[in-house]
Length: 389
Image (cartoon, rainbow, N blue to C red; front, side, top):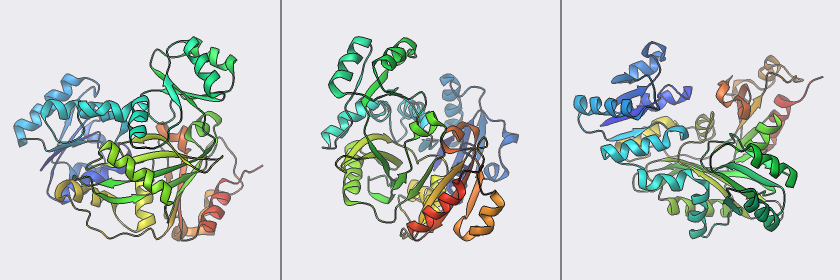
């Protein structure tokens, strides 16, 4: 099996997907703009061959690379990166080289937030009211119909990048006077908490792994307020959330992919409201959280799905697993040494520095904590993020 992996060095923990593909006998063909000598040794050992190009945004260079791999190894069976940023590029390459997976005729509905809403509605899932608006007159009319606050975000965007909360007409006028020259969608602000439905499907669309995470607050609020963030996995998934997640899977025809679906649980009535779909794993260290919560190896299991169309492990959500972020600019009551002395590797099985590209949302340093009961998770969160003097 010939599998091209785009940017296999990033995020840093995703090299494990390549390692397990190679262990199952696949030809793992790395393609990126990173010099080969900069790749970690484990990744080098996992790659059948590596092709470096100078510009990953130059489509002609990518086409030449795929042509070379095809000449050397025969038909390309899969191409992936597990990365939101490259979804459209992957779709174009799959279309041009007739590779299975998401192609051009599907990509807009999973990248454009405005089109996602149409799919959600057909599936009978409530969405936040929102429209792509191009003039201030249209925006004023929309604000009058749904009220303030509003959320403005790129119709195609990643995470909370360039996302704004608009509280009144003056801020709306300011936003439109400074808006970047791209499509923005305006949405009503939903008061509530963010929860997710995350997992993996096989090539027939069967759900082979799933879980859910509860967030301390929205990523937009975290980034804009420069706050600390935490989120944790659930051991029991609420039935209404699971129902909405399964209907979303069916509506978007998710096959042989990780997915990360975000929902609001509205404060006023406790109802589930769809936020957006992401056809990739949840970001940061969440794939590692899958492993610590369920005592599995999700990197190995994804490789089994790709190569054999089979999830090989029985799993149970034995623990809650939390991500707890801290920021360099802040002073905390408890040092790293105090945290590890109090809780140890049993309760905090992993911690590491966070790449700068993620630090605005996730912090500069992250801890993964796990426990069978949620009260212990909250205790650890409070201890790690307790402000200092």
